[in-house]
Amino acid sequence: MSGGPYEESMELEAARRSVLEVVQEMDRVGLTEGSAGNVSMRTRAGEIVLTPTAMAYGEMTTKDLVVTDEAGRVAPGQQTPTTEIGLHLACLNRHHDIAGVVHTHPIHASMFAINHQPIPCVLEEFEFSIGGDVRVAPYFPTGSQELGHAVAELLGDRAAALMSNHGLVVVGSSATDALHLTKLVERAAAIVWGAITMGEPRPLPEENRRIFRSQYLERRSQCS
Ligand SMILES: [Zn+2]
Image (cartoon, rainbow, N blue to C red; front, side):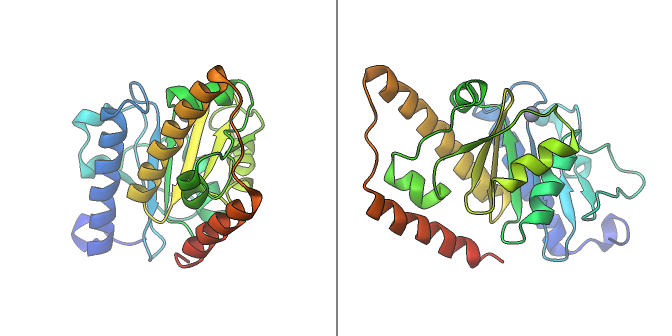
C-alpha cells in the first residue's frame, strides 16, 4: 500500500465509491440498524477498502473509508476500521475468487441465525446465485478471530453463511454483487419462513440443484 490520496489508483478510488454506495444502500433498505453492518472490497492490487467503525452511514464520505493491506495494517491518518475487520480479512484472504464482503443483520435471515437453522435452498434462483443452503457458523463473539475463520470456512463453495445469534455474511465478485446477493438471501429467508408457517416447503429435484450449483461454481471460478 503506498502514498496518500493523491497517489491512489483509479481502481482504488472506484472501490471507495462502490463501498460507500453499497453501505448507504444497505442502510437505506433496512438490512441493518444504526451503525451495524459493514462492507469491504479488495482491489486487484490487493488493497482492501473497509467501512470505519461507529459512523452514521448517511454522513459517511469516501474519505472516511479505511484502506488496509491483507494483514489489516492501516496507514496513518485514517479512521479506525470496523470492529469486524477480522471477519472481512478472513473471507478475503481465504477466498481469492471473491472481492467483496457484505455483513448485515437482516430480520428474516437473522431469525434463522438465532435458531441455528440453515436457510434451505428451495428456490431456483437461490441455488444458481448462492450455490446451496445457507449454512450456520457456530457462535463466537463478534470481532473474534474464531468467528472470522468459522464463517470463511463455509464460503468456499457458496456465497452466504449465517453467524449464530448474530447475522449474515455474503461474498461476491464485488461489494455491489455481495449486496445484491444479500438482498436475495434476505428475500428467500422471508419466503421460506412464510412457506414453513403455511406447510412444508418441498425440495428442488436434486438433479436440477446439481446443475444450478455447478453454474454458481463456474461463475465463481471466473472471478479469480
Ligand atoms: Zn454484526
